[in-house]
Image (cartoon, rainbow, N blue to C red):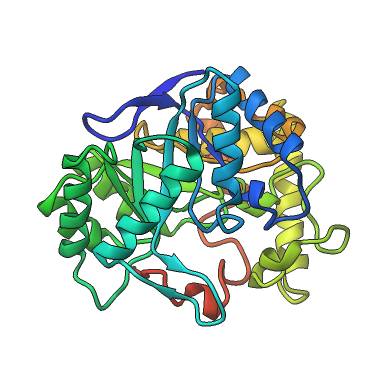
Length: 327
């Protein structure tokens, strides 16, 4: 697989990473054997960049990766995150004490002494981002992390943090049905030498084949709350997605591979991290980096799924409460 640099001075990683959220069971029942097989398939495909977080399955996803590392000789580049405190009163905590404690827990579950990339999962709005950057810089100096990242933030937050200590990566949702980062964030990352890591580049599974369809599949406790899957919005979204599937078929690509290829063509500093717990699903898009799209083909994709085509918000109000919005 092709390689891309994870920020200025950062490690080289596979152009496509693997999001490991589903190992924790959020998108449906899974088991360790299935997750380990998916990690094996990813490594065999040349994917050496794994993305996880402390809250994925309340640590389960990190434990699965830790088991995989102990039983294999592989040494991937690992990113993890902290800041979200789960529970009935879900909140965000960017305090030095919380970030340090959660990082130590992650290192223990992963079975490693350091991670290559440590993200602030969400920004605690009452806490200046400069303080967070100073905390991260201290962790870098101590050898606990190779670099730090920010997630679901606005361009102005990136610039403020980067002025204190260079940011390695920014991770926001980005795909053919979520385009907000085009409004300055992807451009700011390119300007500052920061990697942009799109999560959910396959749009919560709707670019799969068969397409994830709430009329046919159990969406799980998370996706069922997303307005784009509501009875009001889904029929309109489904029609557009069927048009994209038809376009992918005419172009000779699996729809998920074409959606990823589009993402990779948005800039050389993008490293998308599609998530799956299935080795078979992974094989459908693992060679998306080999797809070369002409300007005409990019225009054809845009004609079918133009900016702003999706009906409904990507999050409900509760989910969006901790996300920085910008325009």
